[in-house]
Image 1 (cartoon, helix red, strand yellow):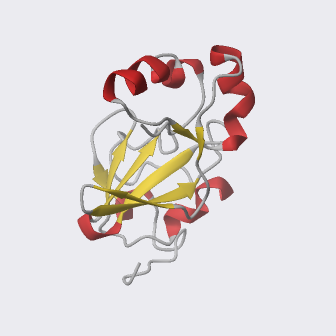
Image 2 (tube, rainbow, N blue to C red):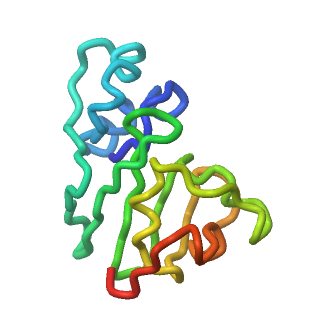
Length: 143
């Protein structure tokens, strides 16, 4: 079970769900203090930028996007053309063309193809190219 950030609302049920699914809990160490505030010394597996995780014949690549918390991450599935951003792109549900300029923390997302489908933590999914103008991002068609 991958936590996209360490705030209480995101990790409070993590242990119970992880035990119920017989699954490890993964968290970026940038949110270690937030995790400890909820779960004390209970252990989790470390989640690092660039890490690749094999799941059901596919691969998830971890992108460190320290925005909402120091350990916020996005999860990119290149073969499927999707990225799960958690709350890092919390404005993703706004109409296209009304997005703020990308924060430096979101730089890892700027290298993804413009047609990548974004599944934010809140709101409807959208296409990444709608979130950043062509002058705000480097579009890489071969990611």
